[in-house]
Image (cartoon, rainbow, N blue to C red; front, side, top):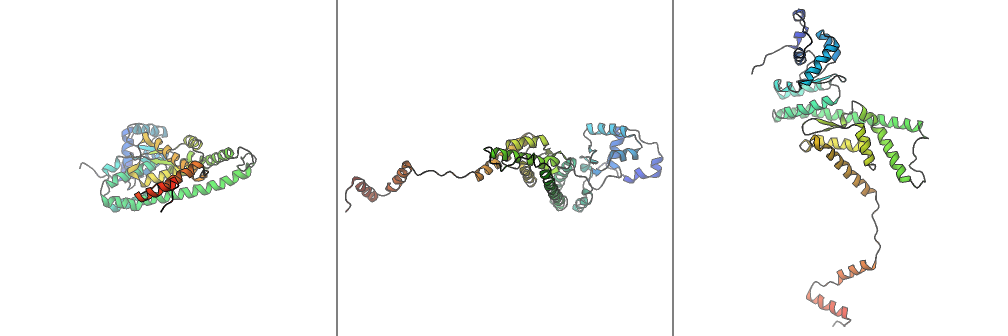
Length: 331
């Protein structure tokens, strides 16, 4: 293959730095993003801030942002400048891990990447790429990054739930008068309870959905990308399905898609997938809470039972039944 080895320390070499510096341009920036000292053993994924990279190149920040926008427009690089995450998706094709142990070594650098939607996208693309290398590589990925991703998701869920409980307690203490009492003896008890539930669920999800760290609300798709649920969508769905906790159902939906990668939906079908899930859960909730109807014993009911018992199955039964119905004595 026509590849060449390049030591990332070249950007720190004294003689190299004394050469005529690179001018802000898309080509120069792309070469820097491929080979700078921030890169790790994970091909194409690393943490670096715009200001730090611009300073290393000796470029003004405005020039760096302009050239980065140019590179991103060509689809060569994806960047989340707020989270300071850079991802070059094609880098893995030219930097394949030499052994499963190299994949295991990614775990150290993986924890250093800030949580964001771009990191989730990189995870699914790395997973797909590594699986194509063979069973041993796929097993190494599952033993390291897969387990770490699940633990991180579980930890963030636990922390978020704890913070929500504290905020809910404070909200209830400060806004006692403005809260809707679900136990009022008004004729609108049931409706009031639904409104209170919607308000509580909105409060639970406000920070989770609007926050940039709400990765658990990114639903995996079949093309290794994700569908990010917005706050507006959540509020709308909670109104449509007031009997269930939509936030919790979305978490379960994401978990289901994580463990069933072969059943993930395309972007065009994801909303139908979500509504099918939520509608099913609401129907089950209504069925569980609704009392079973008790049908009164009517004359029609007794007549049907009598016909069932009097219907003969054999010839002898038919003769006996005929004599009983005609009032004749059986000998």
